[in-house]
Amino acid sequence: MRKKNSSKNFSNFEKKFLKLINNKKNIFHPLVWISGNPKIGKGTYVGGFSEINSKNSSVFIGKNCDIASFVAINVADSHKKCIGISKKIDREKIIIGNNVFIGSHCAILGGAEIGDNCVIAAGTVVRRGKIPPYSLVIGNPAKIKKNFYKKK
Image 1 (cartoon, one colour):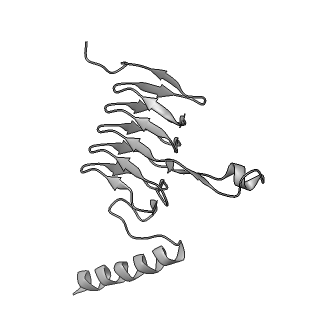
Image 2: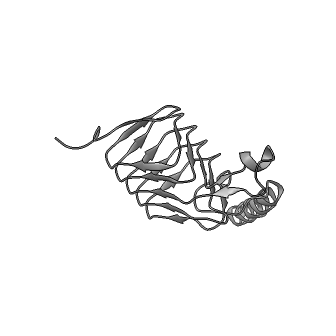
C-alpha cells in the first residue's frame, strides 16, 4: 500500500511542480523545457535544464543523439526587436542529424544544420549554416573541423 501512495504523491507533486515552473511533462526530465512541437528521433537523450524552442518554426533532432544538460536549441532571435530595429522576432528552423553529441552549455541557434555523427564541444555556439557530417565543432565563434570523426 505504501508504494501506491508514494507513487500517487509523486504524480501530484510533479503536476504541481510543472505548473509552478510553467512547463509540460516530457519524456526526458521535468527540467527540460520544450516549446512548440519539435520532432525528436528515437533513442535521443536530452539532459536537465536544457531548452528546445521550436515555437512558430521547426526543430528536427535525429535519432540516437546525446544532448547534455544546459543546452539551448532555439529557433527564435529577438535581439533586433528588443533594440527597436524590427517589429518581429526572427525565426529559422534547426536541423540536427542522427548520432550527434552536443556538450553542456551549447547554444544551437536558428538556421543551424548539423550533419550526422558530429560532436559539438561544450560551450560552443552554432549559428546559421551547414555543418558537414563527422565534424567536430568548437567555440564561439564556432570553428568546424571537417571529417574529424570520419573513419579512415
